[in-house]
Length: 228
Image (cartoon, rainbow, N blue to C red):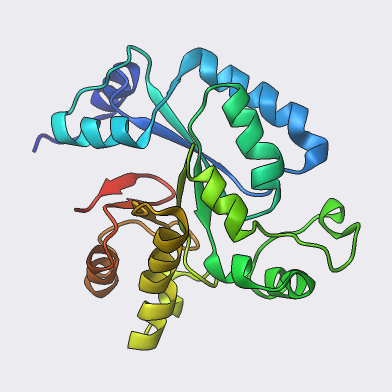
């Protein structure tokens, strides 16, 4: 493999050989217009791609579009993903990726604020206007979103690689979230993401667990890794 140079990197970017993953978390209702305007700007310069197109790129090294590609990725599993982010993306013809913490979704509505605050899931005033109301997505919403977008796990408990040690940890945070999503959506969740966006290759043990769980992509802060 040739050494990566700054000029070569710029040339690859200009040629559209990279996917820009744009990361989002909560998408408040009050910021719907701002989100839409931002995604409109991305859409003018980049092409939103589907999972099938991403699979084809890794298989052939070729894009079906002349524009460079981008993926908007929405983390954690906020209810506003269904109420705000998904409708905006659908209005603009964009395929979004929703990386969900299944433990957040599983939490009864009255316990979701405590779960969020104890698991590094940020909240704002809008989320708490109706105390005890649902903050996270429901499984019914997830099943519906999966018909138009990519839905995959971001662990169960919003944990990083350093927090997963025992066989029980691996089962709870890596394998079980995929089984839950697959059962709800009738699809095979393609990707996994750690809290902190740890990339592939940092721990052979954790990499093996992700692969054996049946994922084919790892989404990190800097890359989308094809692993199977």
